[in-house]
Structure formats: C-alpha cells, structure tokens
Image (cartoon, rainbow, N blue to C red; front, side):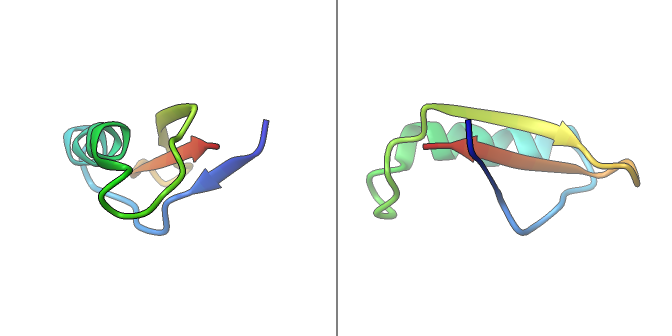
Length: 54
C-alpha cells in the first residue's frame, strides 16, 4: 500500500478528522481519485495529519 501524506499538520485530532471526512465524501469535487483508505495519524511532535491511499 502506498500512502500519500497531506502537507499540513493540525493541532487537534478534530481538525484532521474533519479534513479526512471531507476527503472521503468530497473527493470528486476536487478532482482526486477516490481514496481507498483515509487515516488520521499523530506525528512525533504530537500534531495530527491525514494520509490516504489510492
């Protein structure tokens, strides 16, 4: 599986979760391929990010 990481990190898990949900639901609006899996992860510095696989 090949992960693609979103460039921005967020301070809260809620913010990252909102982006992840939007990616799952609205991928077709922005011209992305339909992601197979979207996941929120925690970085080593304690911030949250979003990664997805196509």
